[in-house]
Image (cartoon, rainbow, N blue to C red; front, side, top):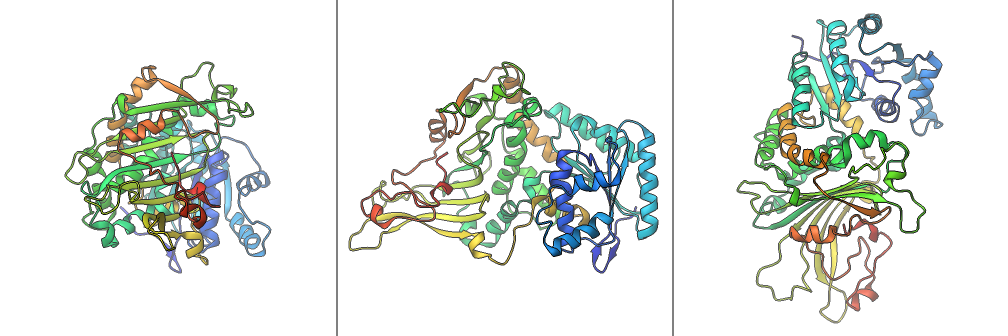
Amino acid sequence: MTTSVTAQNGRPVFTIVVLGASGDLAKKKTFPALFGLFLHGHISPTTRIIGYARTKMDRPDYLKRISQYIKNKTTPKVKAALEQFLDQCTYVSGVYDQDSGFQDLEKELQRVEKEIKTYDRLFYMALPPSVFIPVANGLKKNCYTTKGINRLIVEKPFGMDLESSRTLQKALGALYREDEIYRIDHYLGKEMVKNIMILRFTNQIFGSCWDKDHISNVQITFKEKIGTEGRGGYFDEFGIMRDVMQNHLFQILSLIAMETPASLEAEDIRNAKVDVLRAIPEVVESEVLLGQYGKSEDGTMPSYLDDETVPKGSKTATFAAAAFHINNPRWEGVPFVLKCGKALDQQKVEIRIQFKDMGKNLFQKDVAARNELVIRVQPQEAVYLKMTQKLPGLGMETVLSELDLSYASRFTNLSVPDAYENLILDAIMGEQSNFVRSDELDEAWRIFTPVLHKIDRGQVPVEIYPYGSRGPKHLPDFVARFGFERHAQTYSWPETSQTAASNGSPQLGASASADSKL
C-alpha cells in the first residue's frame, strides 16, 4: 500500500478526476477551487485534471464550461494562469453504470501519468447520491491504481436517514478503506469554522468559561435571502433540515461543543467530535419549529409553492429551528438552538454564544446586558464580543458595545480562501480532520432520523411565513423558551450613535444589520 504523495518542488502532484464535470457543482465550485489552488501555487503546474461526465462535449465547449465561473479572468496574471491551467485539463465522456466509459477514463489516466510520472489519483464525485455507488464501483473496478495513492471525495447528502446512510457507507466501505474516503462538507472548509478550534484552545479567556457555569445558550443560525429559484424540485426531496441543519450546522455544533482533542491529529479531532455527538439524545418534535415561505407581504416575491418545480401542495419545510441538548458534565442544561431558512430578511451564517447574567450586580438587569461572543461565518467574516460599558459623557449611562475583529479591516493584505480550495488541498495532502468520518455521520443521523420521519409523514406542523421576513411568527417565543434573551436596549454593530445612546436607545448604525434579531 502506497502512502507517500509524489511532490515536485515541494508541491503535491496528483491526477485529479472530476466526476460530474458538466454539472453545476463542478463548474461553480470544483473547477474554480482547483484553479485557485493552481493560481496560488498550492498544487504543481504539472498536475493534470480530467473531467468525466455523460455529456458529450468537444474540448472548446468543455474548457468554456469549466472556466465560466472563474473570477477576474481579464487581469493579466489570472488570464495567463488560466491558459496554463486549461492546458492541463482534458475530458472523457462516459456513462456512470457501464465499464466502457471508465475504461476510457483509465486509458486517459495512464496517458497523462506517463507524461507527469506520478500515479497518485484523486477522484472528486461532484454527483447526485443516486449514482454514488455505481460510480464508486466503476472507479474501483477500472480506475483504481496499485502504483500510487487513491483518494475519493464524496459530496453530501450522505443518505436521507440513518438506514440509507448506513447502506451507502456499507457499499462504499466494501470498495474503499476509510482513510481513502473524504466525505466533504464545505462548511468545514470555511475560514471562520476552521478558526473555532484556534479561538477555543489558544485563548485562556474563552477556555476558562466555555461551559454550563458561564454559558446560558448557543444559537447557530443560517439565513438565505433567496428562495429555491427554480430548483425546488431537488430541494423538495430533502427539505431544509436535511439540506443544512443535519450536516452544515451540526458540524459547527460539534466543533463548538467538543472536548479538547488528545492532539491535532485528524483521528483525535474526529474522535472528540464523535464523543460529543454520542452525548446528544434524539431531537424531539416538541422542540422543533418548521416553516415554509409564502408570498412576500407586498406580493412581489413568490411563495415556495409558486416554484413550478415544487410538487403541488408540498409541505416541505424551508425553515427549521430545533433545540439540542448535550448530556455531559460540560454542557448539561445548556440548549444549542440551530436555525436555518430560505427567503429570509438577511444572508448570513453566525454562531452566537450567550453568557449567563451576572450574579449579584451593582447595576440592574436592564442596564447590564448579557455578554455574547458572536462568530460571523459569512459574509463579512468577524469575531466580536458584546459587552456593556459606560457611555462617554458626564453621566453613568451604559451602552452595548463590542470588542471587534472584522477580518476585512484587520487583515487588509490577506484574502479569505474559498472553502472548497481549503478542503481539496486537505484531501490532496491527506489531512482528514476536516472531513466527516463514518461513525460521525452515523451519530448525526441517529439524532435526526426519528423526527425526520415524523416530518415526512406530516406529523409536525409547518407554519407559513412571508418571503423576506425573519421567519415564522412563533420564532421569538421559541428561542426565548430555550433561554435566549434579547436586551431591551437596541444594539448597533459596529457603530453606535452617541446622541441616541445618551437618550437610552442607541439607534442602528450603517452596519446594524450585521447583528441579527433572529
